[in-house]
Length: 349
Image 1 (tube, rainbow, N blue to C red):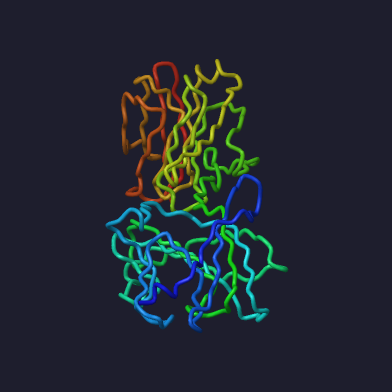
Image 2: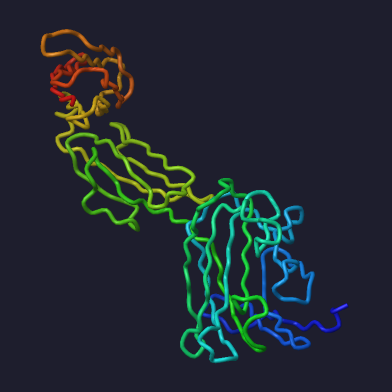
């Protein structure tokens, strides 16, 4: 019934924020029979069931059965980035445009949520009330997602922009330009530890390091983002003196490499020094730099000479031991192979 009164509110514009972008989206609000129709765009579909702008019958939604009106998303991005330029036709300081991005489970999520109790499907949200900048200038925003649930399994994302934060709000002629929208996946490491000690010259943007050492250390790391898919570390060996750390996030991996140069390498091979950490410890320790030739042995004994544990013919360069059942005190770890034997003391508290 109202189709003949409808007016176009979405346009393609050559007004863009920077080189490399050809077009932007231009939204413009209109007055239709005295009712303000906000300019709006969505990655989903619109249901307009009422001429009352605030009616629960008007909403944007993810049509999970139609790929033209839905966007699959099974990972958790850290934030959403976009460029916008907002030009309200009125100089009222209360005018703001709106961006809302909702990651949700495999269900028909609606915005506003009240139309079908969609809050139960939410995994995470990023929202922004967009102000006018200067005389109407382009501005880039990066808005983090807040993963508060209650749902935990992402399946789709619904992104909406509107010329006003209130349905039917604002004035005829409000304009919102949108460009260069992207999801941000932070693949940086937060730190790199060499034998448990932070790398002194670590920079998240630097993916390659060169270290001189008298042994092959154990490398560990943590990622900046808590939402990464995986973090995998490959330890250096005598045959390959490079440790690699791969951060997989958003379907793409970022790899850090640590190149080791062994000083006095011949002596290190003939007289290997294992490393035990942490020491002191609560009983859970790691032993690394084992010559992984199947001829290495480790014995744990107390100060009275009683054998606590014995591991023979070790064929890996690193093992983890759980001695948490032992009483607090000092214990000896004897490392030996066919040419070398040495005793190390550890403290369990």
